[in-house]
Amino acid sequence: NMVLDKSQSSKLPVAPKAPLAYGLAFILSMVLPVFVIIVSEVLDTKIKDKDDLSRVTDIPLVGMIPLSQKKGELVVSTNTNSPVSESFRSIRTNLQFMQGNVNSAEENTTLKKVILITSSVGSEGKSFCSMNLAGVIALGGKKTILLGLDLRKPKLAQYFGQANDKGMSSCLAGINTVDEVITKTPIENLDVIVAGPIPPNPSELILGETLPKILEELAQKYDSIILDTPPLALVTDSLILAEYAGTSIYIVRQNFTMKSNLDYLNNLYHAGKIKNVSLVLNAIKLGARGYGYGYGYGYGYYSSENEEKGITGKIRSKFKR
Image 1 (tube, rainbow, N blue to C red):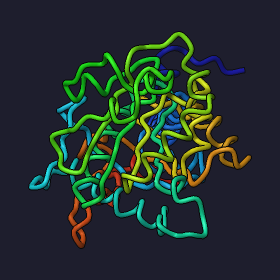
Image 2: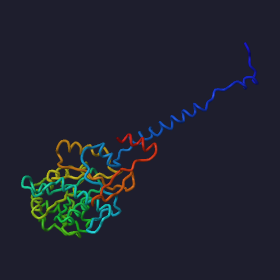
Image 3: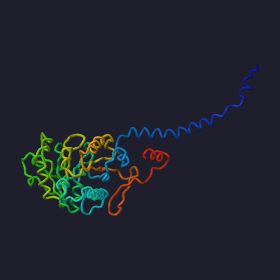
Image 4: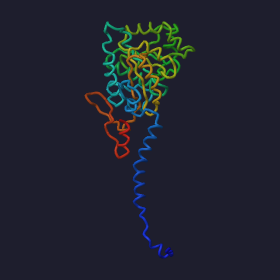
């Protein structure tokens, strides 16, 4: 056998390693982005856009509202054409199709005049949406009243700058009459009944025989009745109140509402326990995830038509279909 010395062995040809390294790098560059996106999708449990909503529920989306810098304020007014005001006007238009003719003798007129606003948990903008939706309906020429029925954590009195010493709770308890608790707001055609003092038995007050009578009385004076109610996933009050509403709106907040929070609503919806329900996606950050703003035919709509760029954007779009 021939034994090679060191000088000879160093001259032997060596198999090239560069192609293998390049191949591994190429495979990693393709696999790693896909892996990162899959992991991010699995770990991301919050609603980001309308595509997320369409994947977790088949309840229709009635409107989208941009993030307002004036939290807890009445931002709609007669001469305002801001994105927030336009989005509420768009929702008002869509609601007209959902409600139909409220003066129809074929159905309960009071029921068709009542719009319930709720959400999953707190801090999703439920009261903000309630007061501004009521405001934009009133600006449209309909005599409107907003009822504060979140008796556990009332906010409307604070938002409207009113005292909370009397309101729905004292009216439901028989301490005050309806006329004694109705107050005016800065918007023409819009009145409000704030929640009033926090009672020890809010569910019992709502379950009593007084609320239907109050709604019947108000239906004689107003074209639209908006109910600001507690979060649906936390207490049973909103589910009880839904029996008195012809239309229900469920507020979902971008990057806040958990996807799993919509499971309970889906069950109620498919069981027929909540009527004529639709979703509003609230507090959208303009420019994020391709959101833009347009004034098509006088109505404000958001779109995500701008596709994400680059290879990761293309891969992400594949998973969204």
